[in-house]
Structures are given as C-alpha cells and as structure tokens.
Image 1 (cartoon, protein in one colour):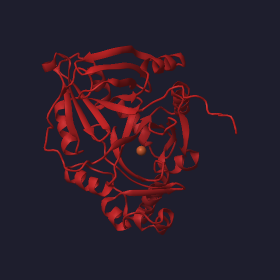
Image 2 (spheres, rainbow, N blue to C red; image 1 turned 120 degrees about the horizontal axis):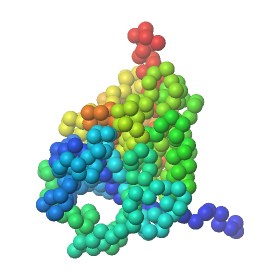
Image 3 (spheres, rainbow, N blue to C red; image 1 turned 30 degrees about the horizontal axis):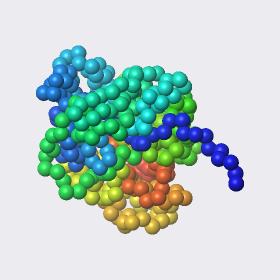
Image 4 (cartoon, protein in one colour; image 1 turned 45 degrees about the vertical axis):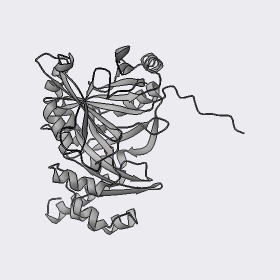
Amino acid sequence: MQPETRTPDVFPVKGVDHLRFLVGNARQAAHFYSTAFGMRCVAYRGPEQGFRDHAEYVMVSGGAKFVLTGMVHAGAPGAEHVTKHGDGISDIAIEVPDVDAAYRHATSTGARGVTEPYDLKDENGTVRMAAIATYGDTVHSLVDRSGYDGPFLPGFVAREPIVAVRPKRFFQAVDHVVGNVELGKMDEWVEFYRRVMGFTNMAEFIGDDIATDYSALMSKVVADGTRKVKFPLNEPAISQRKSQIDEYLEFYGGPGAQHVALATNDILTTVDAMRGAGVEFLNTPDSYYDDPELRARIGQVRVPIEELKKRRILVDRDEDGYLLQIFTAPVQDRPTVFFELIERHGSLGFGKGNFKALFEAIEREQERRGNL
Ligand SMILES: [Fe+2]
C-alpha cells in the first residue's frame, strides 16, 4: 500500500452558501429574479425588523441562494459599492464546517480579514460568520449554519413568494462563479486560492494558444478538493480587439465577479421560459451550428442540434462527457455581470472548445461580409 500522500484539507468547505448582490433597488431586483429567473423569495430583512440601513430579499432556486441588498437611506453601508460598481456581487459566501479555523488559516496565509468570527443569533438558532477579502471589493463570507434552522440567517423573517411559484425550477444550483482580474493578476489570484483555501487548479486552462486570437482573455480554474466550489479567474489578453475583460474592468470600476453559472437539468425548457420572460441571451451565428467540425467534435448529445440551434445553446465535449451552455446579456445597465446556464453530462469543463468555435464562426461571417 502506498502511504496517503494527499495533504490534509487545510480549508474544508461544504459549498457556496449564497451570493450577495448589492443593488440600487432590491425590491425591483427581487421581482426580476422571481419572474425572469423563476426564483422564489423566501426571506426578508429590513427596517420592519429593526435593520435600519437595508432591505434584503433572499431568493432561492434549489440550492442556489441570492441575497439582494438595497440601501434604504443615503450613506448606508454598501451605498459606495453601488455608486462605484453599479449592481454587482459583493459577497461570494462559502459554507464551512469551522469558521474560526477557516478564518485563522486564511488570515495566517495572507488573506485580509474583513470581519472576525462572530455569532448571529435569533430564536431559530445561531450562525457563526466571518469574512475575508478577495479580488477587488469582493469578499468571501464564511458561514457555519449547523446551529440554525430558520428561513436564511438570524434576523431574517420568512416571507411569501413575490409572484406565483413556477411548477418547475429553472435551475438547481450555482455551478461556478467567475472573477475578472487585471492584466497580469490571474496567476496571483490562482496562487491566493491555492495558499489560502487549499484549492487546486482544474485542468481547463485558456492560455496563449487560443486566447490572443479568439477570446482576448486568459483563464484558469481553481476548485476545492470535492469540486463543489469552482472559481474560474480571467484576465484580459492583448488582442486586436478590446478584450471583453477590459470592458468589464472599466465599467465595473475594477476587478469583480463577472458571471455566475447556474446548473440546470433542462436547459431547453429553462431557456424558453427565461426568454419568454424577457431575458436576453447572447446570439450565436448559424455558422457555429452548420460547421461540420462541430458535429464531429460534439458527437451524440441528448437533443438534435436543430433544437440547440433554435435556442442558440452551445455544446462542448471533453474526455469525460459533454455540456450544454448559454450566456445571458448583462443583467444591468453596465456591461458587467451576466449569467450562464449550464447542463452537464459528465463533462467537468467550462466550455473551452466554444471559445475557439464561436470566434471562428464569427470570423467566417466577417469573411463573408468582406470584413476580415
Ligand atoms: Fe462559465
């Protein structure tokens, strides 16, 4: 027998606990995520509960939890975040079994502590929390909710859904959360997650080979040992056109969370429902689907390609299986945060093959117009 060579897990995690969105108007955002994303509003906290600064709506879809936080008066904490970044993700909260140990490990390995461990209590129990800083003005709250049984966190009250609840969930979980960082900083943040959380690099890597010609970005993925928490990190790449990452950094006012991928088990139905509710998705040219190489590359998938083409859903395949994915347009006025829907069939990837295929398809169209 070989001795166990794996290093002990220095920073065990249970998963992504919730994402906090700081927004200009949480009441209206809650309506949007109810109608357009099929999420259910389950909890609320605001002035009525004695929290004078914020109105906060908790939205769920399966295991995915969003907290929408709006400021109810000038100068409330978080107001400057919205002024600087627009609506955005301020907190990617991680559920951990031991907040104190996680916070101690993180701060002793170079993470900046934002909030020391403390207890949040009400009649439903106690949640232990702390927070550390990550890229830009984004933080990771660390949450141990094992001593709590209530609607979200102590202080929140259960509330009725905002609109009639859909019979079928649009998505079941947060698959991954992508961060955009400045040119030259990607490896620093990969190293941060390795050192602070013991995360390791996943195989998928978008590097010089396709970055500069096609995607104008470089990307690496870090994940915990169980692959429950996956954080791709992008930086801009030098290319002839302005990188989409540069555009994000300019309009967000620095590094931040770029997109949240939502895991669905029926992407066709979900895309139809979201489109029907007014969500805009990125368009994919016909040439992507008509490329004989695509058909060879993806092989057999669960639906005919025509069904994917109709909805502009992308496909990628690797040695483990395949995935179906589609990206929304930005969901606020600034060209910053957007969403991805992802339906996995074995593949643990993130759609790397689509970067090249998509950009080649776009170039073919450009060529046809005589613009290449
Ligand atoms: Fe993604």
